[in-house]
Image 1: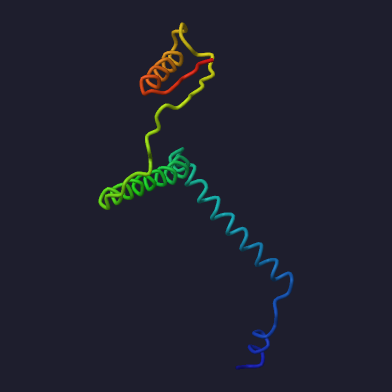
Image 2 (image 1 turned 90 degrees about the vertical axis):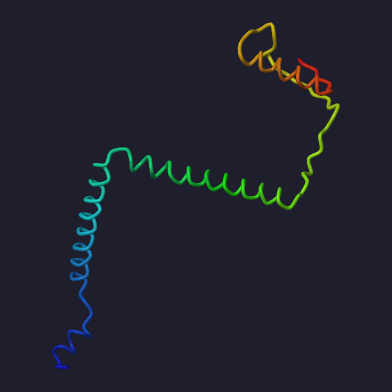
Amino acid sequence: LTPRLLMSIQRSPSDSEVEALDDATSQSLRHRLSQHWRTFRSLGQLPLVMLIYFPRAALSFFTIVVAQFLRNCARMLNTTSSYEKKTNLRILIITDYTPPQTHGIAIRFSHYITHMRQAGHEVQVY
């Protein structure tokens, strides 16, 4: 190694050289990012929709698959459910939506109350 080469290797860069290198690097990075952004925007709304929709859909699908797998495992192992049907519950329903109103919510509440009473529960409506 020559003394001049050895000296250039050992010499640390000056502040102005570091700043020039940082500026060039940041400009290059900004230029590449702006190119990627223009490409991304030229695709329309599809990438944004996929960015939001796909992970949520994948998570939902994964949850359903895991639940079905565990359900089938429980069936194969002949495990019984710990759920015990409860009879003769005392239920209080407080609502403004009751017959003689004729819209969907009132009709639905009427059906709920009828079915609960037929199941043997004591239902009070206020």
